[in-house]
Amino acid sequence: MNLRLPMFLMLCFTFSNALAAACDVYTHSQSDQVPVVEQHTCYTYEGVPSDAIDWSCSNENKDMMNTKKTKIAQCAGDYTAVCKATLTQEALANPHATAKVPGHAGAMLPSNSGVVTYHYAAEDLKQAKIDCEKDGGQWTWQSAQ
Image (cartoon, rainbow, N blue to C red; front, top):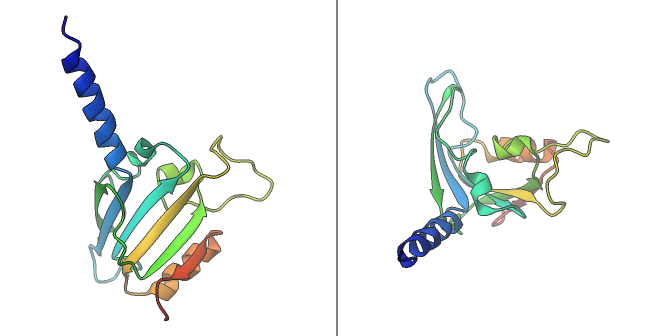
């Protein structure tokens, strides 16, 4: 049996997973009555395997927001602000769930794991900053605001 083809396919699969290490997200409200805080973000996980992002980057969404998520190699560098927060087990499914309950060890994730969310466009970046910091994240502006 020729092992070249299975080895080639395994390498391709591994390489494609390594490329999809970020999730590009576009959000639109389905109603004028529902305000949109985020419009374009991209997030990535640090300290965990690159395929950990697969579940949270699916396009399953039952909110009042129309969200399109696309797995990409890395987030673009032309962001306005960035939020860095602790990665929790909940954040593996929802990148907004980053707060830790005091005294609770949480999931068995590496201590150096984190979620980094890049903000490109939003109706209200100040509210996105409040949400980031309220959940224990660190907010940084890319340029003077």
